[in-house]
Image 1 (spheres, each protein chain N blue to C red):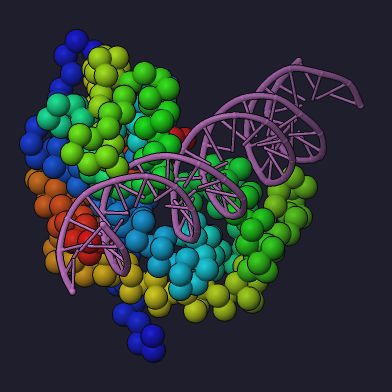
Image 2 (cartoon, rainbow over the protein chains, first blue to last red; image 1 turned 180 degrees about the vertical axis):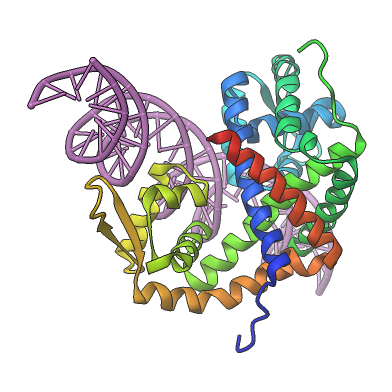
Length: 154
Length: 154
DNA sequence: GGCCTGTAGTTCAAATTTGAACCTCGTGCC
DNA sequence: GGCACGAGGTTCAAATTTGAACTACAGGCC
């Protein structure tokens, strides 16, 4: 620690921009989803992941990996969604310990109703603010970053 | 809502990369700071902002704006830091309602001790993964995004 | 079979976050 | 002066998050 490589101006700008944008965008979407659909962003993401999975269901652990939350956090949110009737739990045939979360018809309906407003908010906050070139660069950069971090976690 | 403009492939990749990177980086830094310095990222940021401000102090509202948290959240964290002796509250001479948060000597010491490890973690998670060109583009893009969102909030 | 190690989910208490309600006090305006 | 309106912070209850146990089971190995 005797010789820390501090951030230069561009690096600092990138870092500050990243943190600020992450917080501001998260805040914005959280509010939009809560107001328009009564869902938190995490809950919305759970529905999205399930809707995209074969059979509309995923193992709890798979889901936790995709969502980047703790296992206990996922347990909590799935319970909430279950109470709301948007998701159901099924036990796994091949592994008694396993639990599948499955999106229900009502979950599909809620997701379909929420999606257009959510996409519009994502566009307004991030996508439509940038040029196609910038978007491609962003996808590439942040894809690399997240791939690395995911790999490092395993 | 009859005609939502869905995201194309690049846009979706940018969005997913953004969300994933934001969560993974936040998670990583949170853990690093907690383990190495006993601070949450929010608390660290409070110390950083105060250390950079003239007199080492800022009004609560100014601080909340820079940190992108709710006012009540800031009240809570400043109270925690005050208990730990890293920050002190002072009342504002010109406005009786106002409160200044001021970094203490111990706060400075804690910040100086935490900074090198934090910067190293930031480099490892984000900065050193990207090329200088990518960093410049990232700074530009996300700077625009956060400026817009900040403006929209006011 | 019996054991040992690891995995899947849940539970629990503690820490944090949030928004709304609530005082206290500045400011502009009549 | 006297008010209405709004800003600055805090408080409060409710919702959420987290990591550390903990339960129950799978798999490999002797």
